[in-house]
Length: 179
Image (cartoon, rainbow, N blue to C red):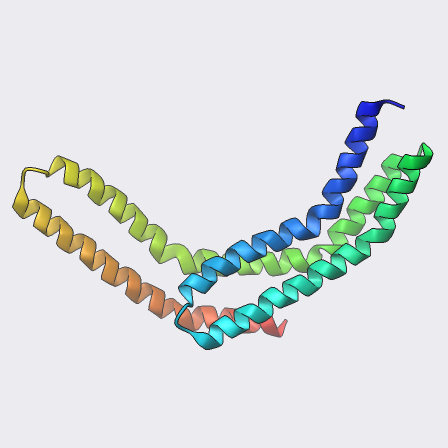
């Protein structure tokens, strides 16, 4: 058999095997963003830990569900069977089904994380624009003072928006934790 084809099939099998963990990694990244946004809300953080634990459980279940189909692929590869492609397709289908829960939970958590970070994304854009204005206004102390005031107001508004989002984000996490 062609070593390149065998290598490609083995890579496909490895990609299938890691699908649950790739999804779990994305969930952890989004959970980190939510931890920052909810840092002063112990109740919401406890619910977030519960959601992340659910993801861990779903990831483990997906990994266990993939063992049989991946074993069949490896057996076909080792034995030089002609049906490797059909076994890979079956393993991919099993992975899609097994990862459905992790993927759905991850997609919902990503939406919540995107909402949580909106104020900070806006603040980052304001700071970038303020930096450009500082260069242009470097010789005008009065204009620079006004710019500092505007940036400070933006910081205050960002904090207020972040605080206002905590309740709704906590409700979202509660719904996720409840299934």
